[in-house]
Length: 555
Image (tube, rainbow, N blue to C red; front, side, top):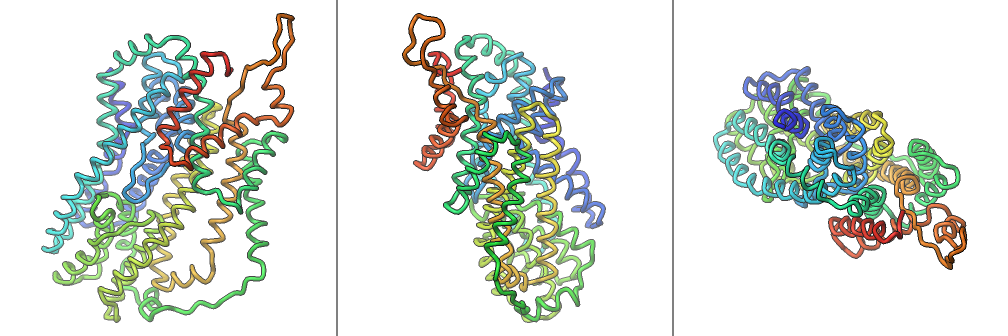
C-alpha cells in the first residue's frame, strides 16, 4: 500500500513542494527576480488555491491515479456540496474538507467500500485537519519573533527565506497524515467497512443526497438578505418547473443581476475623482521600481499565510512582499530595518483585496524612497484603515458569492460523473486566485492612495457584490432543487387491499415538487441560525438518513 500512499500524499500537497518550491527557493536565495519565474509561481499558487478550496479536484485526481475517477468525482462532489459555505475568517479555522475528500476517495477505492460508507470518514478527518491547522498557527507564533530579529539586522534574504519555507507547513499538515493513513490504515479500514451492517451502510449511502443541505444552508447564512431572497426562490422554481440546470441557472442569474443592478443604480451621478495625495499622483509617472521587482512582489502576495499565526496573522507575509521592493529601491541598511519593522505589525484582510493593499503599500514605499512626504504613521495608518473594510467586501464577494457559484456548478457536474467539473474549478477558482491577486495589486500600485477614493465614489464594489449575490442565490435555488435528494415512503390509510392508501410523497408533489428538499434546507438553515455547529448539523443529517432508511420512512 505504500505506492498508493505516496500517490495520495502527492495529491494532498507534496506536488506543491515539488513543483513550486525549487523555483521559489532559487529566486529567494539568488535574488534574481524574473517575470517568467513570477508567472510560474503565480500559476502554481493559483492551482494550489484550487486544491485548497475545491475538494472535487484533489478527489478526482486521487481517483484517476488509483484507477477509479468516477468514485473520486462522486466523493469530491458530495464533500464539496457539504462544505460549500465554509471558509477561513481571521484566526477562525473551520473543519477542512480537502484531506477528508482525498482519504475518503482513496479508502473507498482501495477497500471496495460504498461511497456513503466512505463519506462517513469525512467528519472525523475534517475535524482532524482543523486541529492540525490550529496547531500550525500556534507553532508559527515564535517564528514571527524570529522574523523580528532578522528585521533588526536588515536581513532581507533571511526574512524572505523564512516565510517561504514556513509556508510548506500547510502542505505538510495535509500530505503526511494522508501518507500515513493510507500506508498504515487501509487494512484496518477494510475490516471496519466489512463489519458495517447493511442497514447502516444503506443509511450512510442515502446521506449523500441529504448532506448538500448543510452546504447550502451555510451559504445562505452568509449571503441571504431580504433583498436577495426572492432570487433564491426564482432559481428554485425555475429548476422545479422548467428543469434548468446549474449552468443555465448561472446564466439566468447573470442576466437578472445585471438588469437589477442597472435599474437600482440608474440616475446615480458621475463624480470626477481627484488624487488624494501628490505621492499617489506621481507614483505611476516617476516610478523607480523595475518590472522584475514588481512581479517579484506580486508572487509574494500569495505567501500572505506563509506564517499565519495567532499573534499577528499575516504580518510576515506583508513584510515578505517588500523584499524585492526594498532591494530594487537600493535603500540603506537602516532604511531596510525601518521598513521591515514598519510591516511586521499586525496585518489581516482578505487575500485578494490584500493584494490591492499591498500594491498601495508598495507605491507608498516607493514615494517615500523618492523623498515624498510619506511618514511611517501614514503608511501604517492607511494599512490599518483599509484592512477591515476590504476584508468585509472581499469575504462577501469572493468567499460568499463567486467561490460558491463556481463550487456549486463544479459539484453538480462531479456528482453526475463529469470530469468537466475539474476544469470548472481550475478555471473558476484558480482563475479567480490569479486575477484576484494580479489586478488588485497593480491597480493599487498604479493608483496609490487615490484608489480608495475611486472605490468609494464609483461604488463599483457594492455593485459587483450585489450582482454576484443575486447570481449566487439563483444558482443556490437551482442546486437545492436538483441536488438535495430526500423522499418519504410514508403511506396513510393503508389497508391490505393492493394499491390502497395515500402516499405522503404524492401529496407533497401535488402541492409543489421538491417541497421536502426545500423544507430540509430551511430546517438546516434554522439550526445554523440557532448557532448549532455545522459539524453537529452534519451528524444530525447522517443520523436522520440512517434512522429514516432503517425504519422505512425514507427511500
